[in-house]
Image (tube, rainbow, N blue to C red; front, side, top):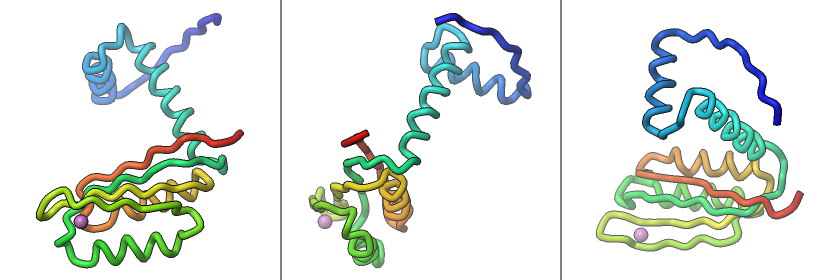
Length: 134
Ligand code: NI
């Protein structure tokens, strides 16, 4: 594919950030790093549309935090049409790992995941999605 060039103006701080990003990820140059970021943006944008996707929301939380389990259950009931199943594992005395299998419009799954992950007491959370049809 033919390559086009363009000039980029950045503040010094932003440029330093970009150069650190290049070094940390072993990109050969800034162009490769920008290409990577643009591809990432394109993927993220695809998930913000109405494609039907399936995936999992993984939550790691401390079940001693007040209301976290009831709030999580409440959110899942409100979105029962998106939630296929929930697996709860008691990792140790404090920690629980919950894997919520979901299916529906990418945008709605993203919203549900954002709500769950932002509950007080969630230590780590992530949504993974795969497209199930075009
Ligand atoms: Ni538990």
